[in-house]
Length: 124
Length: 108
Image (cartoon, rainbow over all chains, first blue to last red; front, side):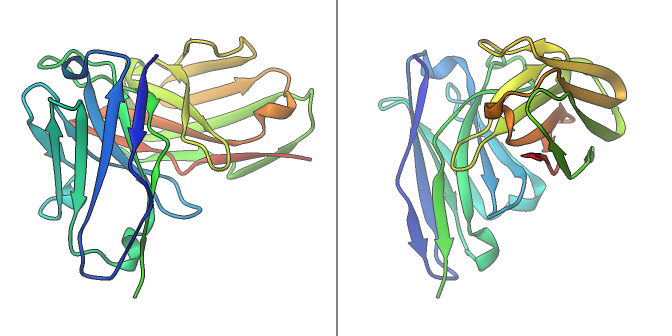
Protein backbone atom coordinates (compact mmCIF):
# COMPACT_ATOMS: atom_id res chain seq x y z
CA UNK A 1 0.00 0.00 0.00
CA UNK A 2 1.11 3.55 -0.65
CA UNK A 3 2.82 5.16 2.32
CA UNK A 4 4.57 8.47 2.86
CA UNK A 5 6.59 8.34 6.07
CA UNK A 6 7.93 11.65 7.37
CA UNK A 7 10.71 12.49 9.78
CA UNK A 8 10.08 13.49 13.36
CA UNK A 9 9.25 16.78 15.04
CA UNK A 10 11.81 19.58 15.06
CA UNK A 11 12.42 22.57 17.31
CA UNK A 12 14.46 25.39 15.80
CA UNK A 13 15.54 28.86 16.78
CA UNK A 14 14.63 31.91 14.69
CA UNK A 15 17.02 32.35 11.78
CA UNK A 16 17.87 28.66 11.59
CA UNK A 17 17.01 26.15 8.86
CA UNK A 18 15.07 22.91 9.02
CA UNK A 19 15.12 19.89 6.73
CA UNK A 20 12.18 17.48 6.69
CA UNK A 21 12.16 14.13 4.89
CA UNK A 22 9.40 12.05 3.32
CA UNK A 23 10.05 8.42 2.35
CA UNK A 24 7.71 6.92 -0.21
CA UNK A 25 6.82 3.25 -0.48
CA UNK A 26 4.22 1.02 -2.09
CA UNK A 27 4.49 2.51 -5.57
CA UNK A 28 7.05 3.49 -8.19
CA UNK A 29 8.68 6.58 -6.71
CA UNK A 30 9.56 8.21 -10.02
CA UNK A 31 6.05 7.94 -11.46
CA UNK A 32 4.17 10.48 -9.35
CA UNK A 33 4.81 14.05 -8.27
CA UNK A 34 5.33 14.87 -4.61
CA UNK A 35 4.44 18.14 -2.92
CA UNK A 36 4.88 19.94 0.39
CA UNK A 37 1.86 21.50 2.11
CA UNK A 38 1.94 23.21 5.49
CA UNK A 39 -0.62 24.00 8.15
CA UNK A 40 -0.04 26.55 10.87
CA UNK A 41 -1.67 25.83 14.26
CA UNK A 42 -5.43 26.09 13.95
CA UNK A 43 -5.14 27.34 10.39
CA UNK A 44 -5.78 26.09 6.86
CA UNK A 45 -3.61 24.37 4.29
CA UNK A 46 -0.94 26.12 2.22
CA UNK A 47 0.81 24.63 -0.81
CA UNK A 48 4.57 25.22 -0.82
CA UNK A 49 5.87 23.50 -3.92
CA UNK A 50 6.36 20.40 -6.05
CA UNK A 51 9.13 17.93 -6.82
CA UNK A 52 9.42 15.81 -9.95
CA UNK A 53 10.95 12.64 -8.43
CA UNK A 54 12.20 11.47 -11.80
CA UNK A 55 13.97 14.58 -13.08
CA UNK A 56 14.51 16.27 -9.73
CA UNK A 57 13.01 19.49 -11.04
CA UNK A 58 11.02 21.69 -8.71
CA UNK A 59 8.61 24.61 -8.63
CA UNK A 60 7.89 26.66 -5.55
CA UNK A 61 5.01 28.86 -4.51
CA UNK A 62 6.01 32.48 -4.89
CA UNK A 63 5.73 33.06 -1.15
CA UNK A 64 8.55 30.61 -0.44
CA UNK A 65 10.88 31.25 -3.37
CA UNK A 66 14.40 31.99 -2.19
CA UNK A 67 13.80 30.34 1.17
CA UNK A 68 12.79 26.77 0.34
CA UNK A 69 14.68 23.97 -1.36
CA UNK A 70 13.08 20.67 -2.30
CA UNK A 71 15.21 17.72 -3.35
CA UNK A 72 14.88 14.00 -3.89
CA UNK A 73 17.02 10.89 -3.54
CA UNK A 74 16.01 8.12 -5.90
CA UNK A 75 18.27 5.61 -4.14
CA UNK A 76 16.07 5.82 -1.04
CA UNK A 77 12.77 6.99 -2.57
CA UNK A 78 12.85 10.05 -0.35
CA UNK A 79 12.06 13.71 -0.90
CA UNK A 80 13.30 16.52 1.30
CA UNK A 81 12.12 20.03 2.09
CA UNK A 82 14.54 22.52 3.58
CA UNK A 83 13.26 25.89 4.80
CA UNK A 84 15.71 28.59 5.83
CA UNK A 85 15.59 31.86 7.77
CA UNK A 86 12.89 30.51 10.03
CA UNK A 87 10.59 32.81 11.99
CA UNK A 88 7.80 32.07 14.44
CA UNK A 89 5.37 32.28 11.51
CA UNK A 90 6.94 29.10 10.11
CA UNK A 91 5.70 27.11 13.10
CA UNK A 92 3.44 24.58 11.43
CA UNK A 93 2.84 20.97 10.53
CA UNK A 94 4.55 20.19 7.24
CA UNK A 95 3.00 17.47 5.06
CA UNK A 96 4.27 15.74 1.97
CA UNK A 97 1.51 14.67 -0.40
CA UNK A 98 1.26 12.90 -3.74
CA UNK A 99 -0.64 13.81 -6.88
CA UNK A 100 -1.54 11.36 -9.60
CA UNK A 101 -0.30 13.39 -12.51
CA UNK A 102 1.75 11.83 -15.30
CA UNK A 103 5.34 12.82 -14.64
CA UNK A 104 6.50 15.12 -17.37
CA UNK A 105 2.98 15.75 -18.67
CA UNK A 106 0.71 17.04 -15.94
CA UNK A 107 1.12 17.57 -12.21
CA UNK A 108 -2.27 16.11 -11.27
CA UNK A 109 -5.09 18.13 -9.72
CA UNK A 110 -5.55 16.58 -6.28
CA UNK A 111 -3.61 14.97 -3.44
CA UNK A 112 -4.46 11.29 -3.03
CA UNK A 113 -1.94 10.29 -0.35
CA UNK A 114 -0.47 12.30 2.51
CA UNK A 115 2.33 11.80 4.97
CA UNK A 116 1.56 11.87 8.68
CA UNK A 117 2.96 15.38 9.04
CA UNK A 118 6.02 16.83 10.77
CA UNK A 119 5.61 19.51 13.41
CA UNK A 120 8.22 22.24 13.13
CA UNK A 121 8.31 24.64 16.05
CA UNK A 122 10.29 27.87 15.79
CA UNK A 123 10.98 29.40 19.17
CA UNK A 124 13.77 31.25 20.90
CA UNK B 1 -3.99 33.21 -7.72
CA UNK B 2 -7.49 31.82 -7.35
CA UNK B 3 -8.95 32.39 -3.89
CA UNK B 4 -11.42 29.86 -2.51
CA UNK B 5 -13.92 31.05 0.09
CA UNK B 6 -15.78 28.44 2.11
CA UNK B 7 -19.03 28.96 3.98
CA UNK B 8 -20.14 28.69 6.62
CA UNK B 9 -17.06 28.80 8.79
CA UNK B 10 -18.74 26.54 11.32
CA UNK B 11 -21.77 24.33 10.84
CA UNK B 12 -23.53 22.86 13.88
CA UNK B 13 -25.75 19.88 13.10
CA UNK B 14 -26.94 16.64 14.66
CA UNK B 15 -26.28 13.09 13.48
CA UNK B 16 -28.76 12.10 10.82
CA UNK B 17 -29.12 15.64 9.50
CA UNK B 18 -28.05 16.83 6.05
CA UNK B 19 -24.98 19.04 5.70
CA UNK B 20 -24.38 21.46 2.86
CA UNK B 21 -20.94 23.06 2.56
CA UNK B 22 -20.12 25.76 0.03
CA UNK B 23 -16.91 26.68 -1.79
CA UNK B 24 -16.80 29.80 -3.95
CA UNK B 25 -13.88 30.64 -6.25
CA UNK B 26 -12.65 34.13 -7.13
CA UNK B 27 -12.58 33.09 -10.78
CA UNK B 28 -13.78 30.12 -12.77
CA UNK B 29 -12.27 26.74 -11.87
CA UNK B 30 -12.30 23.72 -14.13
CA UNK B 31 -14.54 21.09 -12.55
CA UNK B 32 -11.80 18.58 -13.22
CA UNK B 33 -9.56 20.48 -10.85
CA UNK B 34 -11.77 20.93 -7.78
CA UNK B 35 -11.43 18.57 -4.81
CA UNK B 36 -12.72 18.22 -1.25
CA UNK B 37 -10.85 16.88 1.79
CA UNK B 38 -11.82 15.87 5.31
CA UNK B 39 -9.45 16.47 8.20
CA UNK B 40 -9.88 15.15 11.73
CA UNK B 41 -7.84 16.42 14.70
CA UNK B 42 -4.27 15.16 14.67
CA UNK B 43 -4.64 13.61 11.22
CA UNK B 44 -3.60 14.49 7.70
CA UNK B 45 -6.31 15.54 5.25
CA UNK B 46 -8.11 12.74 3.41
CA UNK B 47 -9.29 13.07 -0.18
CA UNK B 48 -13.08 12.77 -0.39
CA UNK B 49 -14.11 14.15 -3.78
CA UNK B 50 -12.10 14.88 -6.93
CA UNK B 51 -13.17 16.31 -10.25
CA UNK B 52 -15.89 18.19 -8.33
CA UNK B 53 -18.17 15.15 -8.13
CA UNK B 54 -16.24 11.86 -8.13
CA UNK B 55 -15.84 10.04 -4.83
CA UNK B 56 -12.36 8.86 -3.92
CA UNK B 57 -11.74 5.21 -3.16
CA UNK B 58 -13.60 4.01 -0.10
CA UNK B 59 -15.66 7.17 0.42
CA UNK B 60 -19.29 6.40 1.34
CA UNK B 61 -22.05 7.47 -1.03
CA UNK B 62 -23.54 9.83 1.53
CA UNK B 63 -20.84 12.28 0.37
CA UNK B 64 -21.76 14.10 -2.84
CA UNK B 65 -19.90 16.83 -4.66
CA UNK B 66 -21.48 19.15 -7.19
CA UNK B 67 -21.07 22.49 -8.89
CA UNK B 68 -19.20 24.22 -11.67
CA UNK B 69 -17.54 27.49 -12.59
CA UNK B 70 -17.17 29.43 -9.36
CA UNK B 71 -19.66 27.65 -7.08
CA UNK B 72 -19.14 24.18 -5.66
CA UNK B 73 -20.95 22.24 -2.94
CA UNK B 74 -20.22 19.25 -0.76
CA UNK B 75 -23.32 17.56 0.60
CA UNK B 76 -23.40 14.90 3.30
CA UNK B 77 -26.83 13.34 3.10
CA UNK B 78 -27.19 11.93 6.62
CA UNK B 79 -24.46 12.73 9.11
CA UNK B 80 -22.71 9.92 10.91
CA UNK B 81 -20.75 10.57 14.14
CA UNK B 82 -17.46 10.09 12.29
CA UNK B 83 -18.29 12.87 9.80
CA UNK B 84 -17.75 15.68 12.30
CA UNK B 85 -14.47 17.21 11.15
CA UNK B 86 -13.05 20.11 9.13
CA UNK B 87 -13.63 20.12 5.38
CA UNK B 88 -11.47 21.89 2.81
CA UNK B 89 -11.99 22.55 -0.87
CA UNK B 90 -8.93 22.79 -3.13
CA UNK B 91 -8.27 23.83 -6.70
CA UNK B 92 -5.42 23.37 -9.16
CA UNK B 93 -4.61 25.84 -11.86
CA UNK B 94 -1.90 28.09 -13.31
CA UNK B 95 0.84 25.90 -11.82
CA UNK B 96 -0.46 26.39 -8.31
CA UNK B 97 -2.75 24.82 -5.76
CA UNK B 98 -4.94 26.72 -3.32
CA UNK B 99 -7.23 25.64 -0.50
CA UNK B 100 -10.24 27.20 1.08
CA UNK B 101 -10.01 28.22 4.72
CA UNK B 102 -12.15 25.28 5.81
CA UNK B 103 -15.59 24.59 7.26
CA UNK B 104 -15.75 23.04 10.71
CA UNK B 105 -18.65 20.61 11.02
CA UNK B 106 -19.48 20.22 14.70
CA UNK B 107 -22.02 18.26 16.68
CA UNK B 108 -24.99 20.32 17.81
